[in-house]
Length: 295
Image (tube, rainbow, N blue to C red; front, side, top):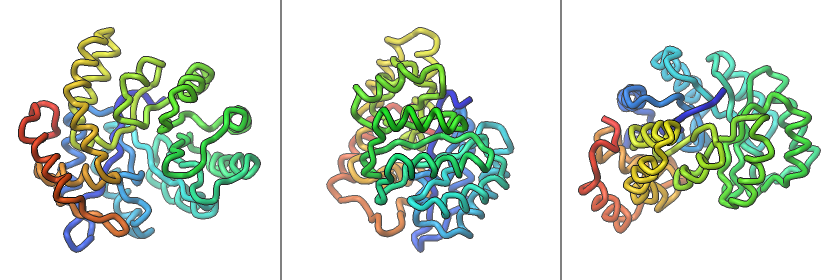
C-alpha cells in the first residue's frame, strides 16, 4: 500500500511566522517533478505541533488541491491525547488521504491497554493507519509482546514508520511482520539497511531537499543494482547527517532557503541554527553534486 519514497513535507514560513504558500507551492511541484511516490502532510517536519487547527485545515486544503491525486497522501494526525487525535483524524478524512500517520502518544507513555485502545479508536474512523514509532521523541519504545497484541487487535494498521535506532529490534520486527504490513524506514541515515531487510520504502525529512537522490537510491536497489544504490547513498550521506545537526526541521529549512525554497524560519520553541552549523552546511552545499537536489 505504501511503497517507495514519501517526503515528510516541511511547512515553509515567512519571517513573521505565517505559512509561505508560494514557497509551499514550489516545494510540492519540485517533489512531484523528482518522482516521489507520496507526500506526508502535517508530520513532525511540517511543525504540525505549532500550527493552529485553522492553519492545519488551510494547509491540507492547499496541498491536496495542488497534488490532485498525482501521488499518495498520508496525513499526520497523532497527538498525545486520544480525543485530539480523533479530532485531527476526522478533519483529515475530509481531504481523502490514503492513510493517516499516528505517532505513539508522547509524554503520557501509555500502558499496553491504553495504547491498544488509542489505536482502536482511530481505526474505527475507517482509514488505514501508519503507526509512527519514534522512541527518541516519544519516550515510548513499544515492546515486542505489546506490538504483537496491537497488530492482532488493530488490523487497520497498514504500516509502521520505524524510527528506532535499535537495529536488532528493527530486524526482528521486519522479519516477523513482512507479510502483515508495510515496514517503512523513518531514519534517513539508515535507508540502505532498511531496504536490505525488505522495507517497503521511506518517509524522509531530508527528501525535502534531496528527493531526486532518494528516489534514485530506491529505484537502483529495486533493480538489483545494490552497489550503485549504496554508492549514491554514500555520496548523499554527509548531507543527510547535516540535516540533523540540530532538531529537525531546522537544518532542512536552512538548506531549503539556501536553494531558493522559502526561508529558514521555524516556530518557537524551535529556533534558528547556530552560526557554526550554518558554516558546516554551507561548505557541504558548495561542493555537493547538484543532481542530488530538488529544482
